[in-house]
Amino acid sequence: MKIVVPVKRVVDYNIKPRVKADGSGVETTGVKMSMNPFDEIAVEEAVRLKEKGVASEVVVVSIGVQQAQDTLRTAMAMGADRAILVLSEESPEPLAVAKVLKAINEKEQPGLFILGKQAIDDDMNATGQMLAGLLGWGQGTFAGKVEVADGRVKVSREIDGGTEDVSLALPAVVTADLRLNEPRYASLPNIMKARKKPTETLKAEDLGVDMTRRLTVVSVAEPQQRQAGVKVGSVGELVEKLRNEAKVI
Amino acid sequence: MTALVLLDHEEGRIRKSALSAVTAASQLGDVHVLVAGDVAVARAAAAIPGVAKVLHAADAQYAHELAEPLAALIVSLAGGYDQIVAAASAVGKNVLPRAAALLDVQPIPEVVSIVDAETFVRPIYAGNALATVRSSDAKKVLTVRGSAFDAAPAEGGSAPIETVVPATNPNVSEFVAVHLSDSERPELESARVVVSGGRGLQSEEKFHVLEPLADKLGAAIGASRAAVDSGFVPNEFQVGQTGKIVAPELYLAFGISGAIQHLAGMKDSRVIVAVNKDPEAPIFQVADYGIVGDLFEIVPALTEALN
Ligand SMILES: Cc1cc2nc3c(=O)[nH]c(=O)nc-3n(C[C@H](O)[C@H](O)[C@H](O)COP(=O)(O)OP(=O)(O)OC[C@H]3O[C@@H](n4cnc5c(N)ncnc54)[C@H](O)[C@@H]3O)c2cc1C
Ligand SMILES: Cc1cc2nc3c(=O)[nH]c(=O)nc-3n(C[C@H](O)[C@H](O)[C@H](O)COP(=O)(O)OP(=O)(O)OC[C@H]3O[C@@H](n4cnc5c(N)ncnc54)[C@H](O)[C@@H]3O)c2cc1C
Image (cartoon, rainbow over all chains, first blue to last red; front, top):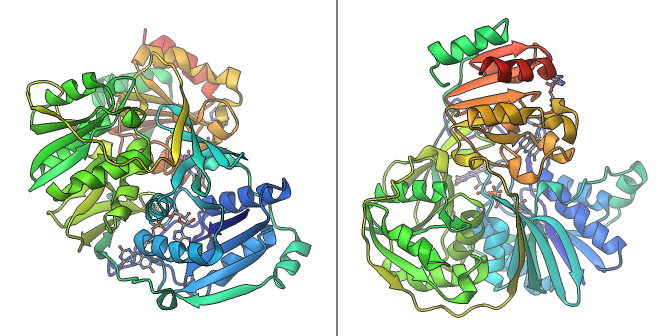
């Protein structure tokens, strides 16, 4: 079984995002970019399934600008076998990404797509669900545990009140939550090896996908900042303030 | 204009965030709600003031709110609606994007404010920026952040209940089991007070130090990702960008440093209290009241002082 893992290049999670002065978006030029942390987890899961003999090949895909090549290389250094870069504008919308991935499905015919549950830039939490919808496949979102057996995948999902287990017919779509695994660091020899792994470059137009945005950004603004309050010296003083000043207890 | 709100529920109770979705939808026009599962929930939905009609999906395939059959059902009903709305809960986030894709619509997740019928505000980058977006889709599909809209009242209405014709089940998914943590405490997302612990709590055993305080305050218990990853508490306690978004009247953070991903989940609380032994911890930058000190001394003292 082949596994396809879509990976997105985003502003590194350690960087505090800054809104551009003209309110058109968040500053991404000159900012450190990395693989979306949830996608590292997705890659790790796919590579582990390959190491267990469940999967035969792991293919990573990124849709975006040329620099997404770096993200694909990181994924190959973690153990993915090859990569596909689909060139488009930066950060296309989930609907467009899902359509591109559907076209990739026709080409690659994987048994499983594993995505991140959300990208930490636009926080949409949508692409995996949309891909599953377009393909008519089952979706195991917010996965904390994944087991493949007998032509099905059992997914333990993190839900609001606890966890839920679902069983899906293969092929299926899984989206990775934080606790699915702890991604490995790529070793230096593996980083070297990854340079020799093949990347195929396509254009979104060539796949016949209309990438037109449905959402236009009217403006991007800083949220209202909270002011730091006061430090109190004792528990007694805290209780007094909560009672008489904040009136919350 | 009429909106269809997917009203999700747990253990027979309508989620508070789903009631917030009703409030949001009523800003757009008339509101119909869709209830998948138990008839008792459909009856409770009929009592929400402002709901004009309840669509009840009684068929067994909808019992567990699985995304595949439910999205197919929403698509079969969508023709009559201008907006499809749900809470940004685990169910809403699972089902609505799938339905949106089938309708060829780009969904608008986690809406915190409605500007007009085309224009919505949503947080991006862990709430470090607020994007105002305008949708060109004819039909809008949105999930709504519960903490940003008041919950609709539970009593006072008397909407008619209509049983809907099931849609074709894609038959690709099966429900196996659900494991809910049984807690006497209020639901994290709707509690008036939240007592939260981080890595500073050190262990599962020591985390219990927060319980008498939470009991005293009638509070829900929350946690940072570090506390969940370390196994002190289960995943459903996590507050933050990728956990639950809360905005209680009072949020008390013990042994939590205040990483942006954590702040994303709690910085809209009305009053924030932070206890941390590190005076430089970033959590103090958002706290209304802070105490620098050892939480293992301060928590019992605070519990005692509330007697
Ligand atoms: C420079 C810039 C300009 C932008 N301009 C606009 C604009 O004009 N209007 C607007 O509405 N938004 C704009 N955005 C935001 C952009 O549309 C969002 O990033 C987009 O909606 C994707 O959401 P998401 O990545 O949060 O999806 P999610 O659904 O959260 O992503 C989930 C998963 O899907 C996969 N995935 C998602 N995207 C890709 C990808 N490209 N390649 C491979 N895998 C992927 C990954 O596995 C990921 O973990 C812009 C962003 C940037 C950086
Ligand atoms: C993709 C991604 C998503 C994430 N999502 C989330 C999320 O949803 N929610 C979330 O919380 N995090 C999230 N994180 C993790 C986040 O970046 C931080 O790592 C995490 O919040 C740290 O938790 P903490 O504050 O408990 O631990 P630490 O940062 O280790 O802080 C512990 C604090 O406890 C204090 N302390 C220790 N002992 C005592 C004592 N005896 N008395 C008083 N104070 C004490 C220390 O001074 C320190 O400030 C995410 C990270 C990533 C990459």
